[in-house]
Amino acid sequence: MKGPIKIAIADMVISFMWVFCSSAFGLLTYFIATAAGVQTVPWASIVIITVVFFVFLSIFNIIGGFLGGASFDPAATTAFYAAGSGADTLISMALRFPAQAAGAVGGALAIMEAIPEQYKHMIGGPSVKVDTHTGAFAEGVLTFAITFIVLLIMLRGPQSEIFKTWFLSIVIVALVTFGSAYTGPSMNPAFAFGWAYVYNQHDTWDHFYVYWICPFIGATLAGWVFRQFFSLPPVKVKFIINSKIPKFRNLEDLEPLPASTGNGQIRYRTPSSAELLESGPNGGSLSPTGNGTDDHLEKMIKRSMARHESISDKIHKYRGVLLVISIPIVLITFLLYVMPGKSASDAAVLEEIELNSRRVGANSRGNRNYAVIFDAGSSGSRVHVYCFDQNLDLVPIGSDLELFEQNYIFLEWSSVDDVLVDLNLEFG
Image (cartoon, rainbow, N blue to C red):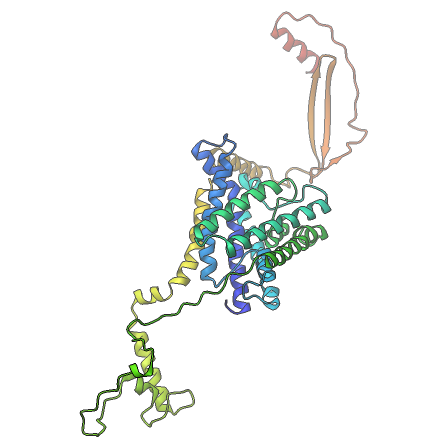
């Protein structure tokens, strides 16, 4: 693992990407089901969103590995620390958790800006649908379950990363479906905080009680229970044995070295480049504290090595950085591509509204605006007049315009033309 500050920055980056992508899983599932024509099949959406989770979890596992073990879930980090697995400390977690929350806020704000207006109701974060204590208990139990299963699969599960990710996807979808009637659920404090910030509920006691305190308690208990019932997998150390080295049981098996055929004199041998680097021209070592000649020679060697690096060598050298940068761009571009834009009818309506707003400005409407409603019924016709101010708030008209008049009309109509004539005579 990298230093605490570097891993915190990596957590913020991957949390941003995860919240941006995972918030659109429901919308992406809807598009896939609609394109496949299975939106009416009850089990189709469950299968599709499980596959979507599997694909994105696999991709984010690769990204997290290139970022040095970055994580987007504070509850999972706490569970691994409580289980005694990983290299986290209290100081590193104190830096990682705020970074994960900040990245989640950025991801939630970014997806709200990227999603078209007509689809914003299909994305969002968790919310409490029951009373506060019931929601807190449900969130704690669900977080305990998910973190314990994550520990079981990752530390004691199958060796294949594909099977691990597939099992995790099934468990996550099952728990989210079960807890949707309680708290969403989140099972990830950073994810819940990002959307609570969008809803302006991030600084409330209910949010911290339901989505922070209880999940951390559940994750810690999951780590302790796992540590009590399961042992951590042993660290595998590989030893490389050279088969060319002969094996000897006794010292007598050792054969003496052949006698030298030379005349006993030491022959001169030209020093290699490694020996020249180890010793300078004056016999001193090439070190930062050496003389100017040694430093100049070292700089010349490094400069010549860097000059001979081709573009392909540089791409191969920084392939990890390029992969980490390109994958989020591809994911975000893919999400923006599959989201349908504004239709022609929506664009025409928006253009008409904008044109009307230009024709009728706020200043041309005056201080007051009136709405007249004609209510024609079998017992009589009524006229309702309402007055609104510039903010479209209802205000009293006053006694000058209040009028009540009741007329009884008994006419015989033989055709539609007679009706129109009589109406014009009465109300014209």
